[in-house]
Image (cartoon, rainbow, N blue to C red):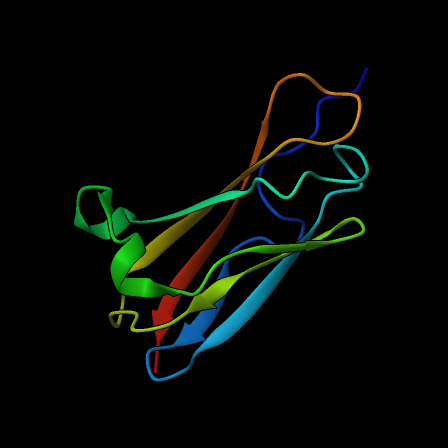
Amino acid sequence: MRPISREVAEGKLYQGVDEQIVYSLTTTPWGSNPTSTVSVKAYDVTDSYAEVTGTVLSGSASVSDDVITLPKVKSLTLGHLYRIEVQFTVTGSATPFEAYIQIEGTR
């Protein structure tokens, strides 16, 4: 079995500090039909990996078919690198998977 990268295929993303963007994650590399129990957390990697979920995420995750729609990402700090971690379970797997998105705050 070939290992699956935990980082999203797009690699590091760039988001303006004044933007508010809703990202989505397709789970097919890990499996199908993710359960509705999804956990999303945000960390400011630049600031000693401080958890900033309450500051930079707004709303909750939702699931439709093989797509997880994440909470809105907002209020980023210029030049800071963020790691958005998405934990989910797919049909046929007893243990959760965790993918991540890296986002840098830009102008």
